[in-house]
Amino acid sequence: MKFPFYIAKRYLFSASKNNAINIITAISSLGIIAGTMAMFVVLSVFSGLKDFSLSFTNDFDPQLKVESNMGKTFFLSEEQEKKLSEIKGVQNYSKIIEEKALFTFNGKDQLAFIKGVDSNFVKVTSIENTIFQGEWLDHDSYQVVIGSGIAQKLSVGLFDFNNVFEAFVVRPGKGAFENPDNAFNKIQLNPIGFYFLNEDLNQKYVFCDLEVAQELLELKSNQITNIEFKLSEKHNESEIRENLKTILGADIVIKNRGQLNESLYRMLNTENLILYLILTLVLIVTLFTLIGALIMMIIDKKTNLKTLFNLGTSIQNLRFIFLTQGFLICIIGGLLGIFLGSIVILLQLKYELFMITPSLAYPVVFSLKNILLTLGTISLLGLLSSWIASSRVNKKLLE
Image (cartoon, rainbow, N blue to C red):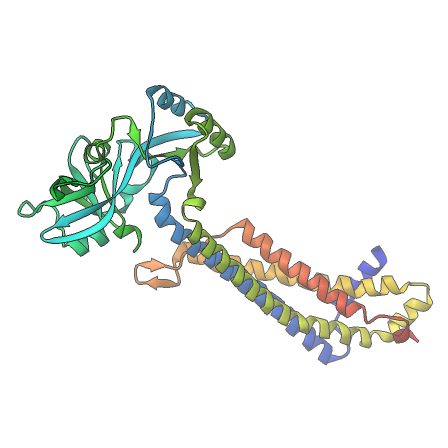
């Protein structure tokens, strides 16, 4: 294989006597460089947009969430709590109560979820980063933090002592209530802060202290609806899942962030796939020029190929010459494209050259995954294109 490779290098770095072939080869090389650069830049931008989109939910969602599949609530004993804290890979956990409630303020009402959290909740999530007005609630108090969407619909203000912010939930029990006033538990709450995440979550939750939620729902002190976990950097999720089932029993459901936001992750992954396929199609169209350039070079080198064939070079080795030449053009063009694309991405990361808004730059991610994906794609397509062109070398051509 050394001989075909040597000839391929000679053909690659030496100009043809036919200027048309040189021009077409240069155009195909520039097309490969531009196409590879475009693919790498676009994939890096989309990776940045994907991380930017997920950053909002990551501030709110835990890495793991445990809930019962046998009912709304379950009991957590002190012994189980102790064992949870001893699980390798678990950095922190928070006990949670979630239930749908009706919130009223100054004659307006809104259905949302009341979410009772303990003091560890801020250690499990980055919810404090989402507070844009006011502050996070103090525990052992009736303070609440409200989503901006709920606050807007109810026209809630902070420290408004003239109007009462109340939560209503259906009183637990069976049978009909003779007096409608006895059908609901209610509690007065004090808005202390507003959070902002996205349109859906801003209208979904009102955060309060865990004991307040237990009081409202008439639950016991060790009765909760779920547990949320923060994991250490080096953790084995499957091993942690097995430990949780051993401690809490088999009647639990364990979900990670991808499962909690399954539709969002599916949408982003689908968009990523479609974008990749479109960029691949652009590269395929670009590589048609490479096929044309190689075929013209085969015709131009017909006399040389006949000489090599008469000297004993096999058809297979003659084809390998142009297969190698086309592949080298793609590899060199791909590397140059990735190099130029990397410069663009690094400049954007450092200097924020392109902006979405005056205060928000286009998010980009410089990752090895995108480099390997781009280089692998151009290499595979280049190999296929070169094989198509090199297959024109046959006995009929050499007769």
